[in-house]
Length: 219
Length: 195
Image: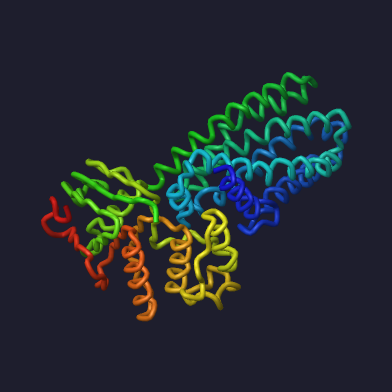
């Protein structure tokens, strides 16, 4: 069972990591960097303003970047019949989507935290703000990844599912955004702790919510 | 081969508003083969998915003993991978490899799965099925897209599987040459047809 799940994790990572086989895996990163690059152009070279708002911009860019990979997370494997074949081998949908969530976070969270370094430079964030952004992303990206897996599973197989997925993720991710970006304003760890708490709830919920969604999509 | 048994009683399947079949019973012991027949849309695939445990029946119950392998129209092989590596994932998961040369796949292992023809994909899915080494086979239209040579091959594989004590349920609207196979026609009188 554990050996099979590790094999599955290896396969999922080969598909989803930046440069992975499923294609479009660099898009969230490029989108994230593009927003950080465009924002100074749009508001002008006002360094104090950029430094004050830059952290929030990074958070909004991260949230929107989380929407991009959703259509490649669950639906292609339902169409392949992968979930059916794994179910016949005794792997529960809950375990499969938990592995998928881990692979999705690994291919999304750490790369985004790396990309936040050049983004912070473009926006002129100081060291303290950068530290809060990185800590916030570390606490918040697991929640974004979990939310992505839930919504991708719920909308798999629906017509226009991708657009619906985007609309569903945004309101559900608002708590992460408020606490994550809020930690920059208060400058304290409480916002980051709350971001982590929201993430933990979402991560704990995902195997059951997404697993049930995959089962019902089977039809 | 591990012990196997497949039995169902009083099965009914509803898709949307339509009751596809009801009161269906069957009992298959080791070595038994069943050919599920009927025109398109009569519920052959649904019956197989219910027997596999992938679809909850509208009524009735299924008893399964032994691992179940399902072959349907989806090969469950990553389309971007070369065939050899796509099959390798299942080989490692199941801990057993099928003989690709016997299935005529040996020269295709470097070809990405998405470039394979319908029949070649079906043969690749057969390789995955053989590697699973499950005593209960559920084959949904296994002959679709296959040439005459491959059709004979599948019929031989099923005969060997049953001779070795396995159970095989074939859903196909095409004729399927198989000695001792019982037939279950979903269009006809359903109750107890194969009991």
